[in-house]
Image (tube, rainbow, N blue to C red; front, side, top):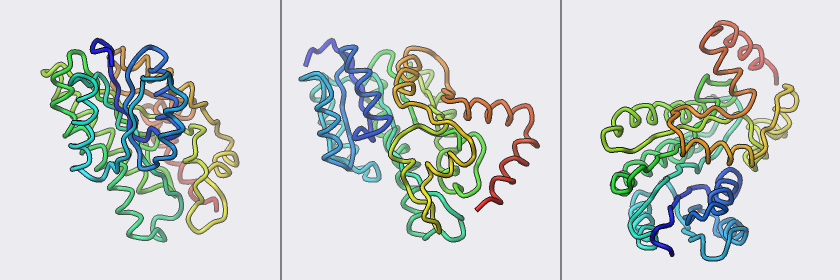
Length: 265
């Protein structure tokens, strides 16, 4: 690897947003570290990138020891630098909170929230050692205002948002920029999850509500702009922008709308 090349490490790099971001940064000559539990997905993403621009790392973000080992392995390739650490891995579950298996609740918290916590905590020393580095955490529009039938998902994404805001304040003195990506419905495999207690997919539910899907390539371009700017909250998609505006200026209206959607089954 060219020691002058910048480096980005992406969890959830085997598909969706992670794959699109990897392609966007690789086009600019960055070295891309791809991490995922899905080895086949990692190989598919790596095959889409220029030769010599990617390294793949099979890793479970819930495992702190795996974080330690993987970032040590990645920085051995990059000459010690991580210019962007993108905590992107996450899973979704939809359906009534009271009917969700407790083990599934714990799994989502472990991946969506603790995976980000581990990534930030272990990655800190590498980010601090890289001038102009950025921690980018993927939250969701669900972190702006929680949604019915997505309670635990909303809770984890609100936690990611809160962590990002805190670290933005705490790490400024270390020269580390922090950004929190909050997309609405992105056209990725997460939308193919089956809603608990139903035979419908999340994708079907989104369509029935008349909401839009944002192309994953648009998210990747937004991420490229975000890591070169100084904005903390990165809102992506019409639905996310409307929700942010409504939560700020018309909270009671947002509450009524979301409660009415929660009555639909």
